[in-house]
Amino acid sequence: MAPPHSNEYSTASPVSSVAAPLFKVNAPNVQYTDEHILSEYTYNNTVINKQADGSMVVEPVNQVYHFKTERAVPRVGLMMVGWGGNNGTTLTASIVAHKRKLTWRNKSGVHSPNYWGSVTQASTVRLGVDANGEDVYIPLSQMLPLVNPTDLVISGWDISGKNLAEGMERAQVLEYDLQRQVYDELATMKPLPSIYYPDFIAANQSDRADNLIEGQDKRKHVEHIKKDIRDFKIANQLDKVIVVWTANTERYAEIIEGVNDTAENFLKAVESSHDEVAPSSIFALACIEENVPFINGSPQNTFVPGLLQLAEQHRAFIGGDDFKSGQTKFKSAIVDFLVNAGIKPVAITSYNHLGNNDGKNLSSHKQFRSKEISKSTVVDDMVAANHVLYQKDEHPDHTVVIKYVPSVGDSKRALDEYECDIFMGGRQSISVYNICEDSLLASPLIIDLVVMAELMTRIQYKTGEMTKFSTFHSVMSILSYMLKAPMVSPNTPVVNALGRQRTAIENIFRACVGLAPNNEMGLEHKIWKQ
Ligand code: NAD
Image: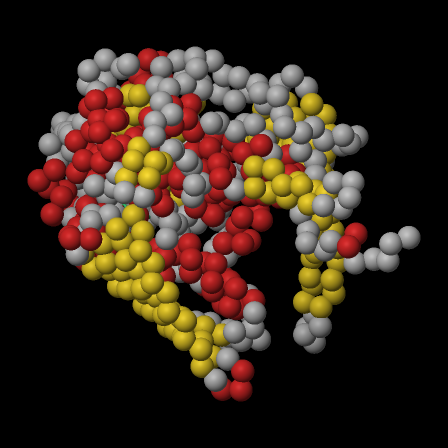
């Protein structure tokens, strides 16, 4: 049991570990050493050369990659910014419930902990076929050595000084019988003081800001956060720390030439404590300088151009923006389906109402605007991909409304209408009504973001032209499945379509163990038996 009012919570065993894999690939291009899985992988692609007359010359190309994945799963700490909020308390309580194998009752019966809603923990992938041609599925978590979320050591910051038990009660997400059982343990956890620049979040949040790092010097704030991370790492003998922003949505930072447009200017802006440097950017900078992966779970533009440049210079891992939990996840699946079915959505109209503190913060216009932007770009790539249905630069009308209705609490309501043009001038209207505790959708996403970001720190690649192995690009676009407005490296196209995002995860995992991408050809079932 942690001492009273500790700033962290540990469930993990004290050392990193190599577990026996569920399967081993038996092939000349794959090698297992004590430390690594090594694979040689041929990446096949198709390059199109568009001719002046409109025709195309198509060329299959391939490139050999060598992947090296560390097998030892390290001891990992998760630090959440906004730890005392709905997501932070819900995730922490659920991990305590897992660790203690708690069960709880409500009127429908006895429940036990699960990680449902987490793609890494609760979904399966088709590994291949058995001798009879039957599909063989395994948990995604068994494709590569991954951190077990129950082993995470948890800590974090919050501008609200309430301990995690009080925060969990305030959140009103988990069943009372579960809250009751974890209460004392969560009461020992108190968020570290945090940075509060009132201009960036809604004025209605000021009454909970009672746990603050002092002073106005932004460079000192960066150093303070860096020290918090180092102290946490040492105190818990951690191999790695990952930081996730699950604090309030901030307003957009203005992009100003000479202030946040280049790495150098951004650092100068921090030194001079410029007004346009947001708290989330301070946390991100601290993580970049400490070489700790940082993921932004809120919609604001934390990664201003100068900060993105800095991350690249440091080769530090970053990801964002905005957890893709309910409405947008559904949208990025259904619009993909409609457009790929040859049906043309012409209007997508989304209403939301929610009554939690996130909704309260979003009732302020500037913070709502950040959310509106992140929600509104989500179908662009799917529409642009179908020039049979859409002319160049044509988009469906897309409207997003969010209202704060305190009495529904964390149980968010989302009403969407998809208005579509169909065959021979007809119309199809699809209406969807979704009700769900928002934090029960977001918490498993935090797990996935942490588990996959940690994995990214253990994978290296090399192509023929390279003399040594390198990590992937700083911007972890593999996290896109969990994010509404995925960041990608400069000049890389954004993929929002949910199916494509999941396929990317699955096939990158496969490549690391030397397996070809999954295809759905099923040729073995389409030929005459000999
Ligand atoms: P919440 O309001 O319950 O929690 C946010 C916490 O952040 C609060 O405890 C607040 O005191 C704290 N905070 C604010 N500014 C801070 C700072 N500078 N430093 C440290 N702590 C700070 O919100 P939530 O429901 O947990 O959601 C968190 C974020 O995740 C929001 O921005 C929300 O938009 C985003 N998000 C949530 C979901 C979801 O499904 N729950 C989905 C997508 C995005």
